[in-house]
Length: 72
Image (cartoon, rainbow, N blue to C red):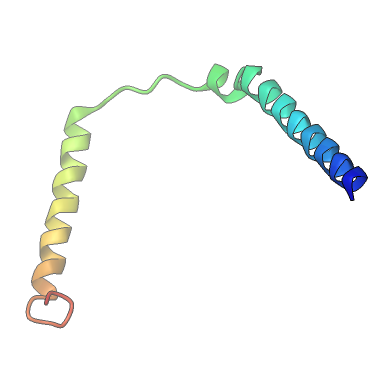
């Protein structure tokens, strides 16, 4: 019984060490997508317009369901 526990502990520690090494390799590699990603400009007017559209849709949906079982 004691010999099996040692084998299980050794196997678990080996698997844990392997996973840690794999994670270190992944985290140290540079992201290939980041090198080719285009720079994104923040367009405030577009963002404001999309937010207004979403808010209007939300208000219309709430009005459509007014008085139904969904709003109680």
